[in-house]
Length: 131
Image 1: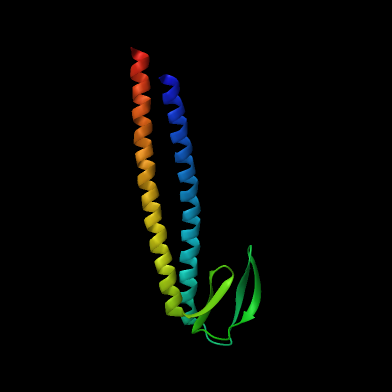
Image 2: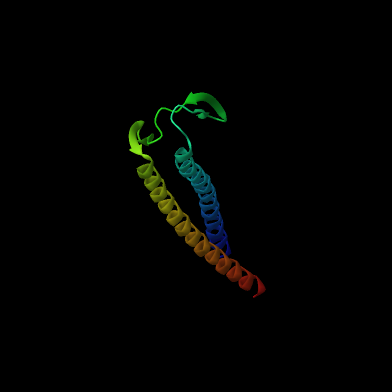
């Protein structure tokens, strides 16, 4: 019985660790989405023709001249890009943030359930050792 409980405990610990790693990834994504949302808002303060630094990834930037501050081009998946108004882009980002936050909440609930199960198993194991 103790061996079975120990294996069950290990499985729950692995699940807990996987959820924790996924939560960390989601938090990074949330940060990126918030940064993107802020960048879309910041476009309101930029004038056409103004020179900016445009990210090319991994902390590298190029100087660029803004041609249009009313629309942005966003990736809609599968290397497909679409031109959207700033408001549409902000709305899409907000929806993505909402979905992400809901997912985080569900995962935290799962994590809590797993921790409760782990505590129950540990308590059972301690009780069996005392007998």
